[in-house]
Amino acid sequence: MNRQETEIDTTNDDIIQNLLQCDDEEQLVETADRLKLWNYKPVVKRIAEVCGYRVLESASEELRNDREVALAIVKNEGLSLKFLPEQFKSDREIVLHAVKSHAHALKFVTDHALRNDREIILTAIRRDGYAVQYASEELRNDREIMLTAVQHHGYEIHFASKELTNDREIVLTSVKQHGDTLKNASEELQNDREIVLTAVKQHGSALQYASENLRNDREIVLQAVKKDESSLEFVGELLKNESEIIRKEAREMN
Image (tube, rainbow, N blue to C red; front, side, top):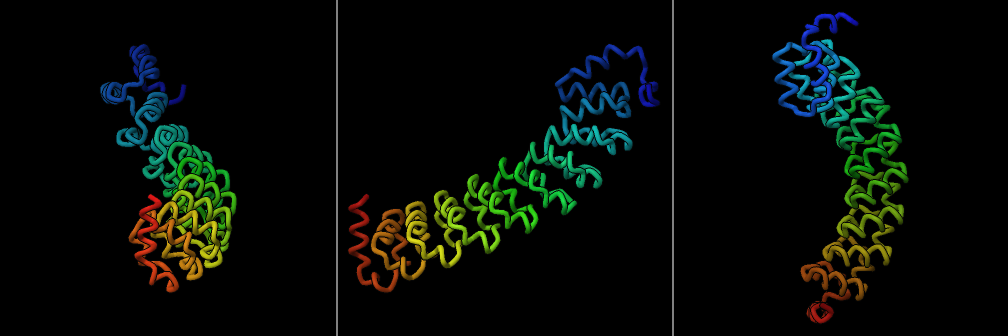
């Protein structure tokens, strides 16, 4: 036994053994308080597993800086990484478990190398595509990572590199979910008929982000107005005189 363990009253062995199997937060904390167990690692680790970062309020300084306790905390709730000592925010295993629990734990990672770690970033964005915003610039220019992100939530294209906003599959995947993300596409893809048609079918006012050429495409304009009549204000110059006719046709389509 180490020093911590020998300080524990052995008459409480049965209570402690039961405590190590306990899932009740209040009972764990109350018993640890009553028996003064905040310096006893097995109990503190169990409280970390069940209560997460709450354990940090009462645990001894030594155990607040214990790696196994820290690991138990982030497995319970990834965002708890925020409250851990700085050394754990650059610990790969702890960070990986944190993002497995909650993708946005990435926000609290202090080591750039871990924000540039493909496994960690992919793990995070497979849980929540928005987490791609915390990735390194290099990985935000990684096609697999950005495609994975927009597959989960189209708005993530906002964080894509300029090069990837000209990637047809990424942009098409994005506008299928949120047509207005057409604004993030390259000029070339804002002139891609399939992409623009897909975008306006999903979000009529995405018409405003289309090229002038496609804002004069009657089918595209009709689909946009069918989805949202206010999109008429974005029609190209060649169709402006036909606004009322287009409005009527779009209503008939509905």
